[in-house]
Image (tube, rainbow, N blue to C red; front, side, top):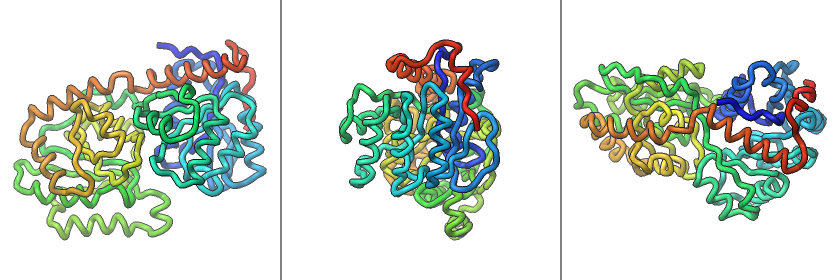
Length: 394
């Protein structure tokens, strides 16, 4: 399946080596687009990476490093993006400069090419200033892209905008996650992964393990991931240390394990495929998009999650179990059910496989490319082959 590549796209977002979900998302989308056209793909895709410090010379696919909050750098970012037929902005309030990241409005004001904004968060109860930012983006953008139906409903129902410009394109997952299960059948592996910090609900998951100590074989609960850079900068590793102390105090250090590595995508996929159950005990009720959830479902793993919006939406067909926020007893009961009744787990595995259809990056990139082509055609921009000669300079 080859992507109809009739326009070039300049991306804006955090990008590796920055470690965060949006950086991973941007890189995955770019790689999926380039992989479909290996000979000319990089000429049609470029990235303006967002950073809070001075960075060296850009190298493909990054065409410009924008230091957030710097007016001169912003002008350079706009100039680089203007070399493309279309622009795709990844939006999260914390990744742009200014109050609530309102620098994004200045960026969009300087662009004259059709622009799509992918919203990684759609708040149900934004502040007045946050609402104003989103609504101004809605006015300026050709398309607003969301990754769940919940996000689409919130955007259309709670914000002033034209619903006809909303496009639902699901979050993608690497095809590596779809490989055969690597579960050993030994001690069952329960897995949570991602950047570690308050709000992930890990305390409740650790407490839930105290209700599993009688199981035979004894399960393992692995918390995989490095401490979030902002958490580490503010308080070092004190949060992670508090989790290890909690595990010792509850007597579950025979179950709970920590791995602070940041794995490559291939290594992460192998680890997820080795799990028997994925636990997402998040405390947020605002999370309308979760890349970790998508990857868990793509790996056909039963998911036990709190009722954050994306989990409720993806697991409603029976691919997992929803338990109340901060309810360690309910989480323990859900884990026990799956670990005790293999047929229940096998049924969820099959349901997860059905949910995952169409969620892998090649399919997602196709939907994205179609949206960007539609935008360019609507503005009279974009034509086959022309874009490859309009590559942005770093």
